[in-house]
Image (cartoon, rainbow, N blue to C red):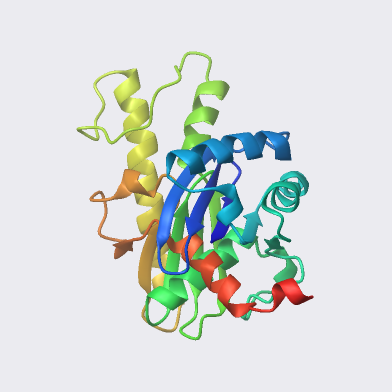
Length: 259
């Protein structure tokens, strides 16, 4: 069985695949100081609850945008799973062209999403990933990563609004019933939520106008569900793009363990 680990700045996803299907998925808050031992205790308990065991895992792939966490995740795989983890960005063949000025600057999460999107949907694609940051990435019809845009995530915007304005409270992000708020909380929720919908719609529109081929727009990421049914700018919501990309990378590197 394969353990796929996708670590973002806010959350870390652990998913188990048995070669035919995904058996289980869990999320934990990202903590760069969490040790391999702490990961092992947490993961062992969840595997047990799912009727699985650590000993059945014979492969591991890690994608992380938090470099200081990779050491502990690597130790988790080596010491408790007894496998050498495949770490995206470290001598792993992604099988993808990166058509930007400095290919080394492309984030692991963006490349993995591009792979997952290309193997799942035909043609040229625009992937909107909503998380700590909101990324808008172009995937060519041949699967190449062709760049995009990065904006602050919706949670960061709400946090900044609260911290920078002394009289504005901390409020939960949710879809408000109306655009015109009737009190401070409603006004903040409306501004941030519908402002982000407008951000998505505006950037999608501009990217479609600039790109020389039709684009299918995909929504993914930890908080993408916030925007389902709120905009027609996104054609499909697919919350599994990243782990599908990780699984495909493993398949493209069948002899990794022989190196």
